[in-house]
Image 1 (cartoon, rainbow, N blue to C red):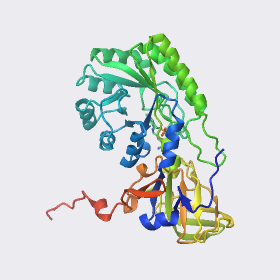
Image 2: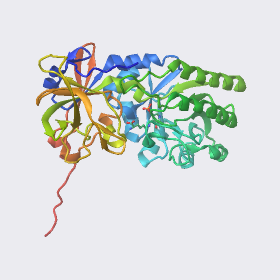
Image 3: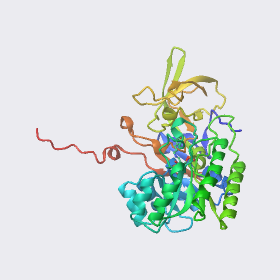
Length: 422
Ligand code: LLP
């Protein structure tokens, strides 16, 4: 069962006040040891392919690469990030896989010209890739007809999902692939993010059915991502052993059917990085209105969008400047600086504002939003002309800047005032 403190003075052995002083706020801080531990949890799988969309800083990619993780990319620039972080192209299994439902011109060029492995989520992708890369191996991402997620917006299966090849169209896709002499060497399913174990399990049997239909060209299967992490006090950790055993059984049945080994990959994003990440913000105003108390921070949904988009819950803690870890607690609403009433970290799905029990705190003290490593920085924006935050990686008790805070010049780079004739 998970517990989260409501007061803290350190992150990974480094003083929060010191981090804030050195790197300014708001700042994302990642603990490298947590990422390494989460990767080790998944050691039973043949390969762990990191879904870098969760947190794609080069330093995080480099860290995971050096510890043996493969990588998934969903755009041309994510492929280029993987390359910039030292991932090679050649290898079995392919170090980088492009998983998407479309190619834009640049991603198609990269996959064709640099021989990056493709996981096709639409018949159009098969057609477009096959037209230029006959003879190559591909993976198919299948929508098994059902899905599940922590929120309707993170459900990636079922007939209303835009993701993957609809399971009933598999035969047509195989025919199309054969026409282009493409070899379907792998299968992939991802039904949603933050799904519970029961739903994730359903994927195994769907995978088996699909693999039997494709036949013995299949040498790898991927569970997709979606492994949940505990975000709330009292949440249990997912039973990884049970999850692995089901997939391993599926893989073994396919191996005996096909008479050759079948690699088992898993593709987590959140599981590897969510718990490693902390967003440090400064409390810049404490407002009392009727019976509501607000802590207003210098970080908003421009830094962490999950609460406003999904009503997502993140643990929070106060950093008491006097070191008193036993301050009285009160119910507070935590909000950001943006000129938008939805800029509230304590909200539920639908935008309902709720309170959080946190220690008393004053202007100038810091508040830490926890479990913010996945879909945190990467979903940030420049709304209200706020710069993207700095990112810091703590390794063996030392803090390293891995992305500088944006400057005003960074912010307006590329903007042009045209010379209009009057
Ligand atoms: N593989 C595929 C094909 C995916 O689409 C995703 C996530 C993953 C793997 C990794 O899923 P994870 O293990 O991280 O759950 N912004 C949302 C999550 C959207 C995930 C999109 N795809 C959030 O903040 O919860």
